[in-house]
Image (cartoon, rainbow, N blue to C red):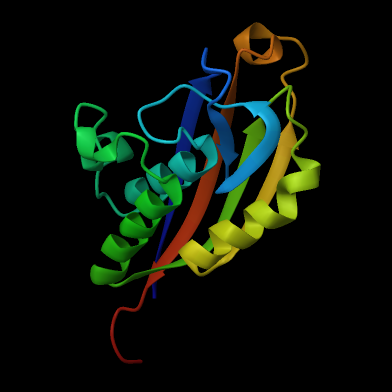
Length: 162
């Protein structure tokens, strides 16, 4: 077996559009303003996608789904993540696990953690861990100007019959 580790990071500021939904880990969070972005701006799904792509050297999410391409405007980020997983599958890779740290002053991640884990795990077909973290008032994240996510992944590929 061959193993690879990848890490991903994404950050988006909150949108000026009060009707934009907030989507994190494929879950729409009620009562919160969404994040500014070309797609649905799901920082969790984006960070996981970048970690997976980086782990096997397939580029990054901006190369695959550029914000200059209107095909991806308003795209469901779980759909983008599914395409990333499909590309890994086609190259013989399997996701072993995913670990995410979501940095946000709001909303609280805990009430949505299980559903986020379930939805992401369904797409990547592996265990997913989600942790909520606060920036403790430091910088733009600490002033609740946006949300960031850091993701780490482990993938494996069978090197042939044993």
